[in-house]
Image (tube, rainbow, N blue to C red; front, top):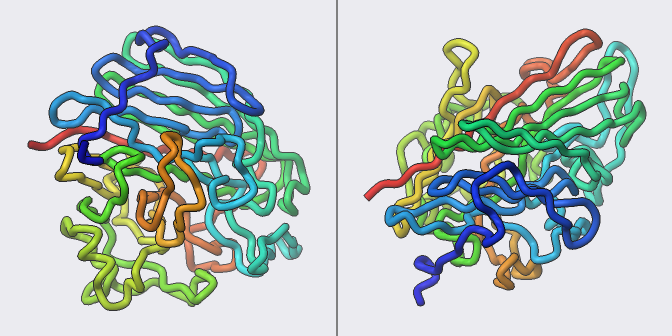
Length: 361
């Protein structure tokens, strides 16, 4: 069978009623929810993780389009981020330090000396508390986490809620909220990797990608911003029209892969606006990403080397999936010209990202 036509059915125990809470392999629990004929998700409380997402193709055949390791509890390497909620600060903070209100804070750092996705023990490694939500039009879970003052070096006692909700209209929504008792940077996102041909189908080089951004953030060899935002015109980062990922990665300056922040078009009002479109001609699946966030980190999985086995036992190799991480900009706590990520007592952090699935002939 051609990998692009490999089928994956929804879990046999799921009937379309209220979310099902089931034991997980390893710590925590898993929740399965969705609507027959639409989307079905599996969320794990370890890392508030989107472990699976079944979406129909142009023929109505569902496949799991989210990458995840065979061992959901694997948190010792890059597999830790697959589908997880990352924070307290998604992306990088240079040298693991920042100043806020005249005080300098030092964070836990990875091997390169920078803080990535909240530090060495970020939100992706935590057990979240979950509760179900179910109405005739909406179903899913709310996940809750407390991050105490000093957690990974960040100030403030932070309380976070993440909603993962599916509508009958084939939309999956991530809604984030948080409040704190002391000023602190907050920047949350979900780190799912998508392959719209199916998580075991090989790579996404045949997909087409569009990103609604006129500028991007240049970075150095450590993926730390070098300063300012450059126009995408005439560069490898001009994705304003649909472009095959293989063709995009072959452009001079792409260096075989993207791991860059794109500065999205300004919003008109408070509603989420379109950030990106991913389309798989082989299956007809189309994913439209809408968000209230100012940036989108596009990562095409160039560092995947086959060492991570997926849920079906397939090794994930280069470009097995693409991450479309809606967020504020990397290293913003050290860059006053970027939109602020500081949350203060009495205010509420709110963010919303919608994954809108459909098909094309």
